[in-house]
Length: 348
Picture 1 (cartoon, rainbow, N blue to C red):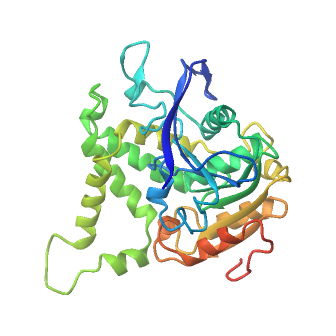
Picture 2 (tube, rainbow, N blue to C red):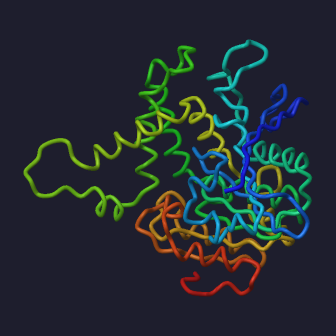
């Protein structure tokens, strides 16, 4: 596959929504295909712990001959501001101290992430995005960008997210941060600290990302009179260690904070008023039938407040993470974007 991973260094002071500044930022991004006139451009937003190599983690959707066809489309995916995969974040070096930011890294909001996307967009010379797509934290970025830069994005696919983070999602985020803070190595200034806390935090997160049905299907224990070492328990241990092997505990902490503060209506007159202003982008909202983190009813409410938006529910056993698992319905919906109307099967 023809793609290249790059780092764009923005040397000017970066103003954060919280009032603090960063002395310049790095933006990591992956580009699939050339940016040229007449070639459709797709911008993919990463979710909570993703990276910019979108084709490596959204394998069912992105690649040659797939719904997002890297042989016909130019695809851009940027690491979010606050990431540990190339963009400036808590694990990056603070120029003022020569040491990693760690717990001193300021709060990053979704709007800050989108401001970084704007910097990268201008650097790449992109003036129009034919399709923007993301799930969860990625969908939040897409919705913010449509509001912040009207007319830039022709079509937005908004998957398994909300316009304003619910108390339910905030509660899961706080439980995960409490797990991190319970690890005494998380606050001792060691860049390698917090690993045991991250394992526990990821275990909490995985419960919210899956569903009762998924655990029943994949982690059910045979009737063997066991008293310990159950499948669900070993599964959470495995998922915790898997994330520790590739991610920063300090970045996990700040990124969950970013999701907590997501609210497109902040300083704009509220969610309903803000979403009603979206008129230059066709918005397609997609929910997952078994999602307990962002229930289908919440996604439907977002669609109802955006003029002309559609809402599709896709059936999946895998809860919130269902958009990352093979699902023909998701591929069908994305394939039809721009070819109205999208087939109405399973429309809600």
